[in-house]
Image (cartoon, rainbow, N blue to C red; front, side, top):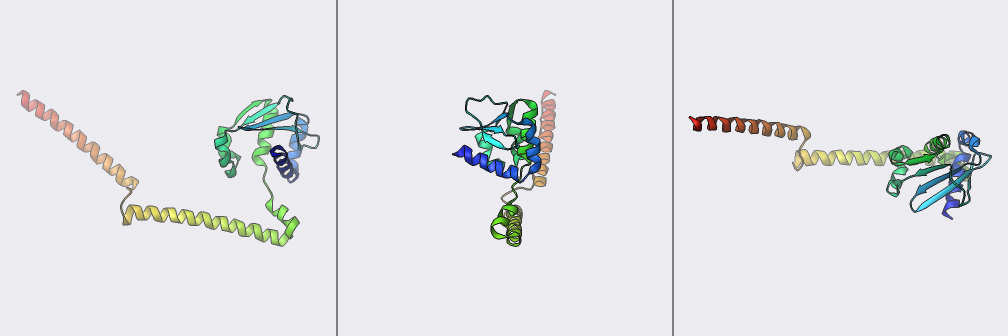
Length: 190
């Protein structure tokens, strides 16, 4: 059931990106195995450049493995998890598959326009984008204000410049103390 949902979702995204289907067509019949334990999704590229479920006993031409811990980061885009992905198998097919998966984007406005119409869909997406930007701005302002409060008004945190100054003063004091100890040793020897 999860496999059918994942395949339907990927095919929906491919339907919105004709370039991706064209890029996959030369790999018709090849099987990709997408693994993120405990889920393993076997996809076969069909003649239209879309995905179909491959038989469980079909060997994979390319395998892409993603650690389960990295799944939440995928919401920030595939670039956020690219270092944690392990790829093996046919290099050309794996590269094409990786390129398609990295660059697929959901056209939310297009899907909403089928339900609500173009104008309402455009306004919904625009309003959502403004809301997200406002949330990010509010979070950034809160973090900056909190940092200012904790460093200036209620000095609980040190500014990096103050910490660096303290470290250099400590180093100078250590060096002065070492020189003083040497002088004391010379005086005692006389």
